[in-house]
Length: 162
Image (tube, rainbow, N blue to C red):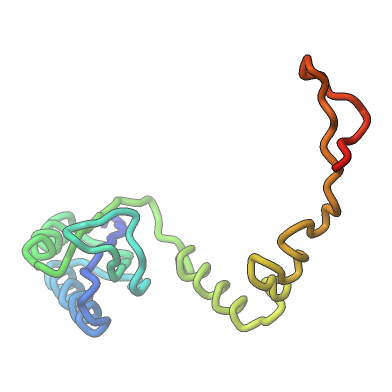
């Protein structure tokens, strides 16, 4: 049987329990028609690159599927009828990737980094002050005095007194 990766986006006001129920419903449809779901990942609520049907965020669900095309066609038909589903995409692949997806690995890495206090390199302070010095001058020091200009607009090396 053919191998597929399938992802669908569920609107932001749906609860994670509703997303899990929808995944289980789609799993039942696939298994009822001779398909098999190898892996299911819920990526949670994430921001969208652009608005879809007046939503700026969506719950992402990812599935690795093995089965006949008829099972996938029925699953996609039911997803199109569901009002909570914003988009779906099915791609045929040669083989499924083992282990967690890159998105889940990144989330785990970010969570580990969030536990460390020294990750950001310390407190930068606010814009005016902090570890960058005073807003005026800072590391640059004092400005040099302006140069005197003659009648033709040419600068001379003697500074303006004043």
